[in-house]
Image (cartoon, rainbow, N blue to C red):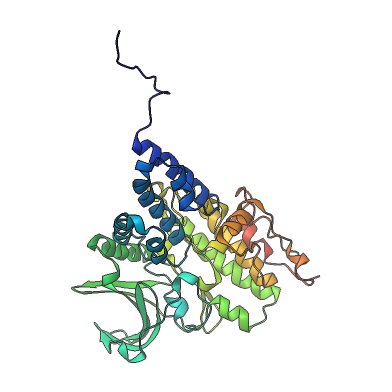
Length: 397
């Protein structure tokens, strides 16, 4: 009698790697659908010998999802929750520090220029250094004042001594990058954004790399963000239309160059002294030449994300994703409220994916007959720049 047991493909026992992958895939699926599953619940489903390996994978998946959603990351609670496998937790956190998502090279650069005290997204709120700590000069640039400071960089208002003009300098903190490749990718992203040359897009003038110093030279916009501007100035429908059409034209140009912005929001739209809008922060922009490599990535600011972004379909995104974000901004300017509101991230995910926003007129009595529904259509088909600009002649009844 042959004691050797034969297994069919379907009956073959799963390896540890297969068992861990199966649970991780389900855990990741829940995060993508807007839920916030508990790591402990998944550990309870695992074989005892699999749990330590599984824990590292689950922490890695959860922190990546939270970072992509713009949440501030605190690793201390993981150390407290799993003290019995502290070495696995520490190893996972160390790995994440070396493989963290690249910082946005243009993120919140110019929107802090004249509006440092305006509203910030949660992930960008950090206490700036002491006022007397900034350098007096960087290269040929005379530093005039600090405009803002975030997790990865500090932004200064400066004077270009050679060309005698004001600029904004973004200076990344090199110690935050961990590895040379991450810093190089930061520089590459800034150079990519410099390809965009449109009067409605904040320009990148130069990127300088020197030993122990990297900085990005950008157009200085001496005005507020759209957030601050709308908060302090009642905007009639015609003014909203003018602003949104100008922004849509700038975004349309970026689309023609193969870029999707992915982070359009009022804080990333600046106004100069004449009231002209500029689209800023192309650091999260995705070019069609590389997006196939970015499947599964979640990037942007959650309240303004399109359903495609929420579903992590970065490899499938096109300009219609940005048009959704423009629809959210339009709705917010008209009604002073966002079309999708929730207390928790997973509730907001669900609202974006499955709910239709209330018509603007149900929120504001004197609201023009602007159809936001075409811009906020979950099927993406009706979303076009033509429909986005179709509210140009809208008026109150």
